[in-house]
Amino acid sequence: MSAGHRASQLEAGEVVRAGPTAFALTDIEAMRVTDGVATGGSKNISFDPSAGILRGAAAAASDDQTIVGLMRRYSEWASALIVDSAPEYAPHLRMGRTSLRTRDAGAPAISPRKDDRRLHADAFTSRPTAGARILRVFSNINPAGQARIWQVGEAFEDYARRWADRIRRPLTGEAWLLERIGLTRGRRTPYDALMLGLHDRGKLDESYQRTGPRRVVSFAAGESWLVFTDSVIHAAVSGRFALEQTFYLPVEGMVNPSISPLRVLERITGRRLV
Ligand code: SIN
Ligand code: FE
Image (cartoon, rainbow, N blue to C red):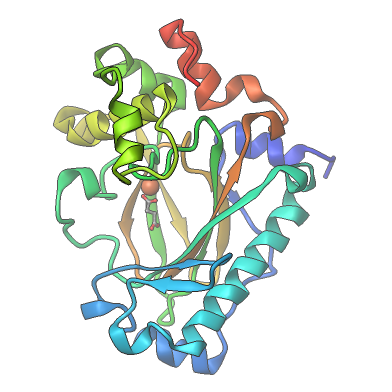
């Protein structure tokens, strides 16, 4: 496989499956993961690899060294996988959160905006990326052999053109205020505001959710995959127990920056967005 091949596939919107180097739980980890490690079995657990802090775990699990160790091991494994798959990204990548997704992806969500069963491109409310790409590594670690099922939608540009001219622009001082009062970590750029607007408009558009183009993609237990979730339109249909590692990639680190959501949205709106 030629250098840059995987990176180009990812940038073109493909979900890239990892080879046979699967991530596997140890017996001890498997026991802890299945017995309801998240509060009420309903929340995902998130881990900050740089600070070593676990969030969303049941009280007893928050300093559970088995779970902390698992999250750390996964973040290292996912990093090695990316470096191996897309070595040109390595010098540019910034590490984000690790998550352990214990809840049933097909279960009802607390609100339509938080409902990942609805087609969307990822955009973070409190963590503006200022154009940097969201690259995620997922692994289906379901112990009973259950697949994780997604739907994958149309090209990002088609998705964006549906609502781009109808997204409210932030008020003067709004981004500053959000940062000031601690609702965002760093300044929400016009790019971040537009991505959030598209995320919300898309999820709330019942007709799009019913009839928008999509195909079903299934990930077997034991499988791992890489995907730019800020440009690949996706919805989780079903499945329990997955690990996920988020990375941020500056647009300049891409093989083809002109197909980044940032550049696509700048072309659509005719404005600079960061
Ligand atoms: C999502 O990113 O929307 C959910 C994907 C998953 O948990 O499988
Ligand atoms: Fe998502």
